[in-house]
Image (tube, rainbow, N blue to C red):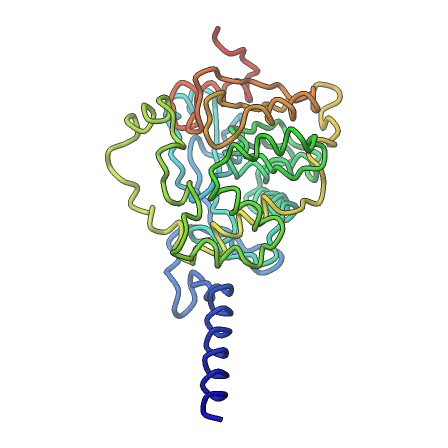
Length: 345
């Protein structure tokens, strides 16, 4: 009997441990009694959540161009953009950045989806009175918000996707091509992405277990950076962002892990089946890819561009994943989107 009781207790302990390892702790909501303080302006969305934002450039009332820029993975509204105040004043640019759900000081959204990201952007625009048309730029994994805008917001002034992360399970990809490129990823990332797509309930466990390498990007694996990326890092401000600690302050699950689950899950639509949102050429959609990007495979990006010929595709021969943080590329991205300027030869 004693052995049976001991066995039952041991089994129960294992089950409790397993349950805890797959269930993340509650988020520390900003402004709640036990959560971080609210230090930035926020709007209240229709579902009751709050969205934190930051404005830069010229005042929106005086702006000729209003741009909403969407940050990438493990980033925030304080994303570094080497676009000088002089350039923004010269061109009349107003830039609005915001913490996506669960990041920084924006409330988590347990129901976050590709579609919900577009509606967050639309509500943010409406609340701040940006007007009927505005531009959108997305960076890295933040580009799933831009794909959603192209699908659900019909009145954009233009859009740019910068080094957009690929979902290997988009239905239009030829299985053989997607599988070949997928197998070029590090094993730890193959496991991570497979879990996120097929058994997302186990993602928190995988991302927090200590037995195996779990994610090259979160472990800062040096293989992810090429020479161009390393050179850009050397150009970044030496002073650290004083608010960098806020990115994950509400918990990694509703910020980083939720990002992975949403992007690599099953979307509400296939991006490669989107119709041209600007059939009369009243605006344009641009896509910037770095040929040497170690995070985003150019082979699949080229296939996306081939399927969507209305997207103006630019593959930078020596470009990596950090192009938006390079002064020359950043200014070129803005000038192309807003002014239609051709890229320098």
